[in-house]
Amino acid sequence: MSIFDLDGKIALVTGAGSGLGRQFAVTLADAGASVVLAARRREKLEETANAVREAGGSALCVSLDVTSTDSIRDCFAEIIKEVGTPDIVVNNAGVAVDRYLLDTTEEEWDTVIDTDLKGVFLVGQAAAQAMIDADKPGSIINISSILGLHIAKTLGAYSAAKTGVISLTKTMALEWVRHGIRVNAIAPGYFITEMNEHQLNSEAGEFLRSRIPMKRIGDLAELSGPLLLLASDAGSYMTGGTLTADGGQLCRSL
Image (cartoon, rainbow, N blue to C red; front, top):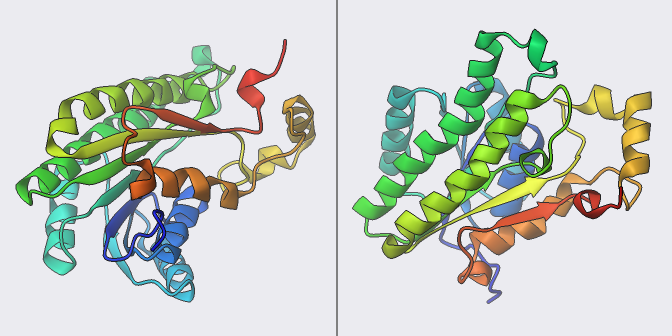
């Protein structure tokens, strides 16, 4: 049996309707996990569920608003009733606002911070409590970004949230390690998704590619390795860390 094997594990992926979330769900299913797909848009979840089943896995679709404690409570109650307490939780739900700070409204700021940072806290808190109540060790994986480690103009709210996710990950790891719960983060660089496809396929996207040492945008499948490392026994001695997958972008020279 491979140390990356997830047979018998239950994995919850938030923001599973498209992009990174869909890739994470299929990856976990392919490794043997039963996958729970959560997002606001139920119709998008069905598309991901079909992809999971094509990979030979099983999928349960649940509605979830990560900014609402009531929604999170109901979501976990449904998951526990239907399939059991999750062993793996991937905090992936997120939004971004591409705007200079002077033009960013309070509503836009709150939307990004509430979804990308507060949502990670609320879902992580609920997941950890469920694992503790079930006396079950587990792995929580928070999706940050290289913009949590290095800023960019017009993405101030997003960068602030993703920086907060990295710090929050460390605190979660420190407080919950005594319960056998590992908490780590992944900080992806640029990968083409529905949210950024237009930008990355533009002239600005070509300029961005030229500044990445590997001279290309990442393929979503290249996030499968970091995910499986943190989700499985292969990462059993890892907690509180952040893995980057960015084609060397953060280490490029000035």
